[in-house]
Length: 308
Image (cartoon, rainbow, N blue to C red; front, top):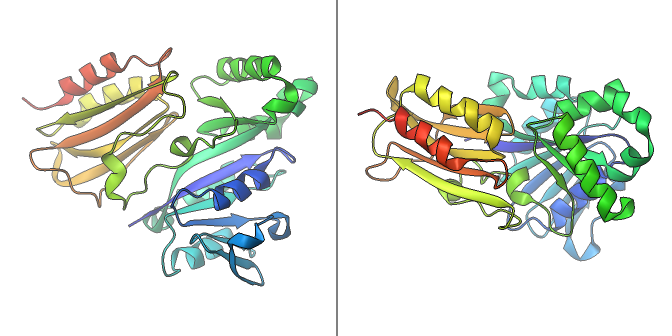
């Protein structure tokens, strides 16, 4: 049963460590394991500490934080083997590194079986980007942004509300169809994490941060789907949706239902550990922005994919 991975990238000073610190302390019931570059920079509230040893901190809420010891995949393997196993893994990339190579490593089929890359989140320093026009042409910054499934603008309060809104719009236009958000008081947990392959809540409706901004639809089918027609629907989903997740049984492989996940424009299909309910051959949750997503068109294409 694969543990979902959230890969966090961004330029130096974008706020990666601050975000990881918040994720560990506001875990919302998840056992999160964080693999970080600068272990000493993680500022854990003493009241939450359970134990601490060289390179590893355990929290009372079940989360752990460990330093990257040389090889990422070796560190990842040791984290996955912990008992109890983490519900999710957060990996911090270096601010001066191109995340593309890490992404390729994490998509290795052997690794993917134990720990599956679910979301690539890149932090954009709202203050710096607003003040440094040359950053938009920086090859490293561009690679970090283009590698992302989701962009999160940090320091929006320092840049000012109007400047932050303009930056979000600019990023949306430049890097369409990537979803772009400004980090406010609430962490957008449902966009950073799914519910995890092993969680029976995986087919429950996702709760968007702002009901006025997002639209969510739960779609089900009583019969298997045509893979070719599903791919037609997937093309539209990747353009219109922020996220989709569910379990699907295809006519071409009816013996094995597949876990479907879409984040931004990246989709995965892997054998599903989650059983489908009685009388169901597919169950998918779709979430998109109201002003962009036309969920009616998407569900119509999904309906066409269902075998007669």
